[in-house]
Image: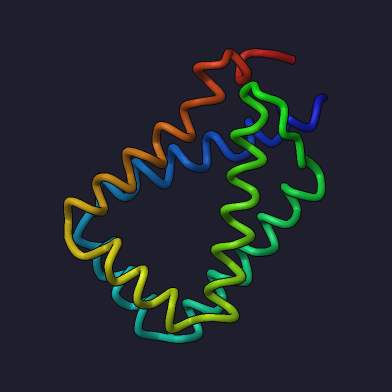
Length: 130
């Protein structure tokens, strides 16, 4: 199977489940985000996991063609950079996270963005192939 399709089938459903979880459990996600921003170990571990997953994607799939594949590459780089910031610059990550997740509306917006990003491979007809 093509790496792009494999990664789209892996990342797409994951982002959709994250989006649904956020929308169905907004109050719980608000608490989890506050906890993650105030307990250093959670911030560190999320950064470590994000960086590892991002680097795996970037090393397997650093494709900059102007088609759907670039979305996977961009997600990989965003995960890598986000992980690096949480590990190396935790105060910056806490300030950014506190600003981004300042209320329920922001969680809904993030969930909608995540859901769209996860749905993107399906819209491209990728889930039904192979």
